[in-house]
Length: 149
Image: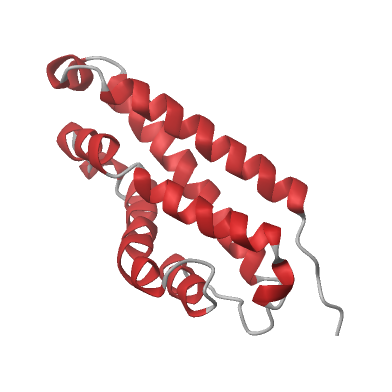
């Protein structure tokens, strides 16, 4: 069986993309809520959040596909496997990252049900969750052998 190596360039591009999306959401978080919900802020924030979440799970899938037994078929399962393999803290994986996976599915499949209030709350209170995930990914990039890659 051939062991695949990490494509560090691909991961770094996705990290950069997530960080850019976070920057855009931080700008939108400073708009007063009344303006946010009536203007384009809500739609833009939803777009940037979706792209950030997709980046997280593309990186997660890439890393797990390089670990024997790491392959998964669902996003929530991916979150838990990332904790199981210590890519991120297990508690973070089983709670926050699993919730992020669920929210990714909500944005994709139930986008019409998402309210400006919930997006505004996320961009004002939860963007640090992406930093926690990225910190774990950067540890993997710095020492893939430690993670069996």
